[in-house]
Image 1: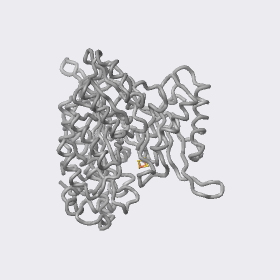
Image 2: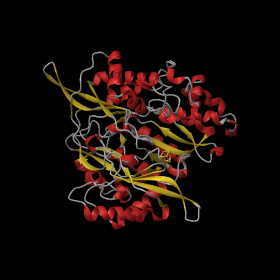
Image 3: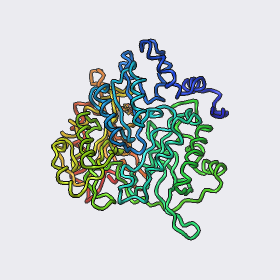
Image 4: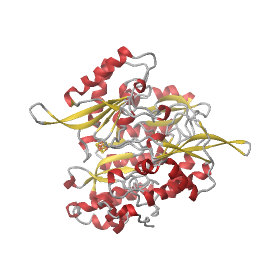
Length: 516
Ligand code: SF4
């Protein structure tokens, strides 16, 4: 279905004009013919379509290699899928798989000529790259501990898969003004990072016909990027069986009314800011007239999207192990070691959280000590206590075309340096993001580090970083506030150390950077 053209679209941006000529999902139809020719013959105007297949042309662009992202709805994979994810890394990804802040996985160096056969293998294990990027509904995220979490209202895994199935490959929704991020979680600790998604379902209770009903309140219009906005509460409560219809109505309203002139102002958050929540909600109620008013929000904290450490599951006698993966970059051989642990001691699954870490569920009490003693844990921590355990990083200048500075390969040495100098009794999150697009969640970190262009006193160009403080999604959320000036790479550790020393020396008990 093509979207309804409104007054706002007398002048469409270039991508919009292209998308009217060919649907983004047609990239899968085009690829077998495209790869018969050298990559240099692909016109740059086509690069936009690759996004809909989860592909970004990696720099140097002339080489014909891709960053490729695979969607993992809710961040849960079975071990056959895990084996294949490792296999791709070994055969096409230079031996590494990167975990994202949206429970997906991504690779670099994926060769153009091999794309059709790579996609075939991914589809054969029940996964897809379709919609992992592009102007479409993206990977739908969940509480990474859904179904095993003692601190959730109910299990949301089936619901996430249902909403994913509704949108996946559906050409009614494959031409949105920009990306659409949906979060569904019933975690009491906001494990779905609700306020930074376009559409979020958060746990709520509502008295209906004399009974207490479990369901969701709904937030709308959140998102990071250059101009971050926190999601705003609508006066709506839905039961789990109403979630698909509500998501459908929201995405339809966005498709038909979202802005298509200027891509930097096309996310749903800009429409919500202009219309206000009340107008958007009124339009929703015209589509779904029987929606209940909001229930009692059940969220009582924020997990920072991380599921780290060893903790009992809601299933008596079982534990999950949340393993810190520094900068989210995992060598395939190490990933295979975790797969082996799950195969031998767990069940047929592994999970990804929102802070680039891995979760191994269903380790029995009886096996726990044996598993903890395995050699892989000499290199990866299940006992998070250092800055390195909580840090996240985007791709950065190593591969990303938009980056102002390097990130991923810097995070580990940077945080190791700081861990040698400081020790804190509560988690602090330092994120390293390569530009204002904020992929590593600079705006919600305790200390957000953002790559920026800089110059030396003599005028030479250098990579520099802006520092910001005090982000959180507690109490509805608060974005980091930017400090003046920039630091170059050589002074980055000392710059952050000065802030940490000030925090250590002056904080009151349990004071976080949020209240800094
Ligand atoms: Fe690239 Fe910028 Fe996103 Fe980092 S934040 S991955 S540099 S677009």
